[in-house]
Image (cartoon, rainbow, N blue to C red; front, side, top):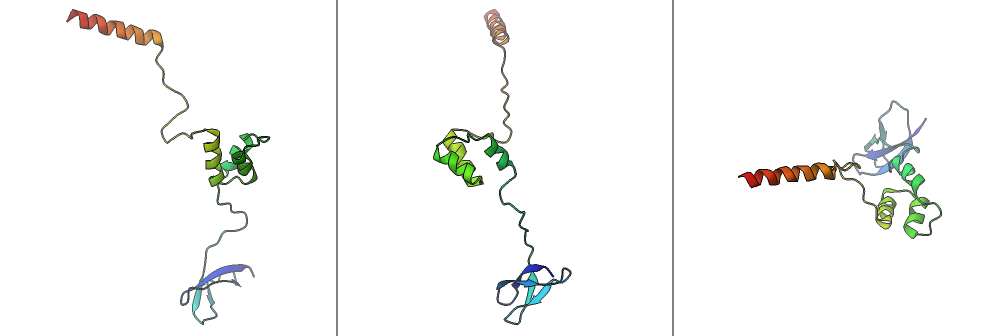
Length: 121
């Protein structure tokens, strides 16, 4: 029988108990009925999988404290400290890496046409 987490509906106590997989209720020490909680297994990690890819590009031989802390424990909090320490700003929603630029010759040509139209008026 597997071990599950339960919470009592009467006293609010949370406890572990062995129960059948198809059973959903247990009896608490106070005598009230307890419902089974949904819990996560050992493989669960609160931080995202992407943190490992960020840690892979961090400078491994750096002596900076924010880098050492991030490499020792790649969490979201340490990630924020790392990007602040490195002077990096993550992209906001809607931003892209490419910048739209107008070739200087085109913008000069447009400016000349504008000046020509203004002089005729």
